[in-house]
Image 1 (tube, rainbow, N blue to C red):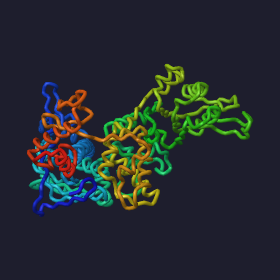
Image 2: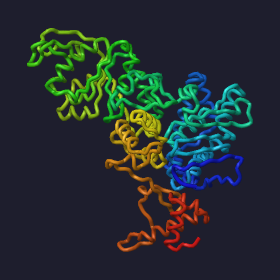
Image 3: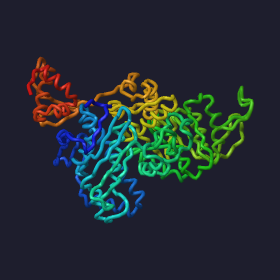
Image 4: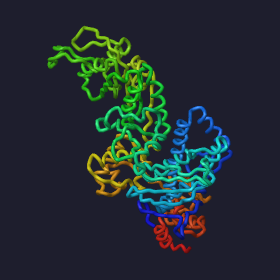
Length: 575
């Protein structure tokens, strides 16, 4: 069977089915009782009583209501599934698509969540095709729900459905929606889930997708996406290939925190300061803050302070009277007057001159402005939302920003995390941008190849969401019509992409190569091991650990089986 991007099909009725060994995954489970830690690969885990989790689940349902509780629990599962998908692709990077994908069902078994039995499976990452049908045996979530509520009329394995959505969407690089078609909580002998691309479920997919939305305002798009700047075009989990009204989608804890803070401050009159790197999406959060505020019916006026020449910034903000300077042939209101009764968004506020900062401070404190060339005082009723990608505290210390203005703006700061700290959101974002680019350029692209997805998830994203949009659009242009986006289409302008590699340690486990501090192999000249000695030792250790199973040994080394066979022959190692 071929590697990444290949098609893999399986049905329980077909003979000779080989489920991959779980040994390579189990080797990644480490207990460190002296430190109070349990590790699964690089993820910290914990043991928890099922009864305690069931009590927490019941408390959420009783206190928040079933719909809200289901959304929270589903999103917890989604995050776990997305993390496990990244782990699976690392640990089985040299395996077939089939073996690599089945790491997910094996991981939930290893984690004590449920035992999965495939009923049908059809995967083609390159073409974006997916269909999965699994039995869930002895599901902890069904057990907990039955203990609290008994038999009911609705499936209750919400966390497992969320896990499947997160795992498969991250693995495929596109939104895959799962539904529970049978459940022990409804009287069936076992639970059963079915998954396919979101758009294949039809219009009723929105009923399920709502449980992946965070906060009420994520379902609203205040401005048509094609009219927003690149910083504002955050992804949405779409059930079709066209724009929808969700506006924003995220599943990461960082995204959730920002949503929560926006909802808290929106109904007040407090000045809000959005902090964060360039391209993280500060403007769209400000749009939603305005919509949730009591000023929603008023205007929303945005101005990029860095894009206006210093000599014109005052006239842009406060307006100008006729004859105030050469070229001022008519009187014109500024952004403050135009935003009267609504919200004024000042982006890149750290670029304002000292003079403009002083006038802005007065406008904030007194609610008054003067047009350039005029002595008349005008009252304005404006809520200011500011944003910056610079450290204003440092700018104050350096004398580049007024301290009094900083404290006036810093009433309610909200830091928007960079994309590298929101990796759970990446599969949703990249799929959305691919769809938009395909529609814009009239191309048909089937999806992302596995190695492309892996690179996108592991890339550090210095340009954040804006960089992702541009990178995916460039890839769509470069890719062949009807093909998939590959690594060669994405990183074409000198971006630093690091490959994920692993080495076998003496205990038989895998460890990321960058974390290895010492290898006590046979030393060559200068006290370092020769390359031949190092490779020979690793090959022998992997074969011993796999008990002679070459496919398993190849997975332990994160290489393909043909590559392993070539290296065994090269170093004359008999198996």
